[in-house]
Image (cartoon, rainbow, N blue to C red; front, side, top):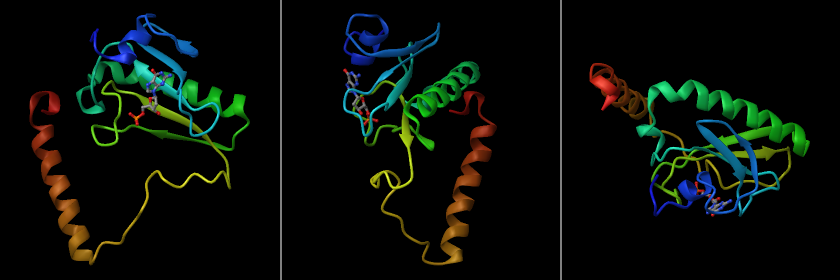
Length: 147
Ligand code: DGP
């Protein structure tokens, strides 16, 4: 537990939250500043700052819970869909890994995620960008723990 982390305190029961789900590895609770009612955050109870540090062996359980809570939020809120999002460092106001679970419906007015967009200047620019990512992936795949 990180004693300076608000989400660690919520996970430890030291700060209040509207908890909707809990198991041994994760906790889900209402975001206190929801984009829409039902906006929920799923966190690992253990402190990890970003998704990039999250251990592979926890992914299965954590993402199974993400599916379950996302389905529950969609059903309970009567929404047409769900938007899941993770801010890593940039736009991340709480440095404890958290997945946003937002109920979405057509015409709900949400615009600010994944926006603004632009086009690649050319196919060459797109190829160069994809090449850089592929090359880095090869390096990471050959490095223990992908570090
Ligand atoms: P992000 O911008 O991705 O770091 O989102 C963090 C979210 O966490 C933000 O929507 C507000 C929410 N939040 C921050 N502090 C607390 C808190 O103490 N309790 C609850 N329930 N939500 C919080």
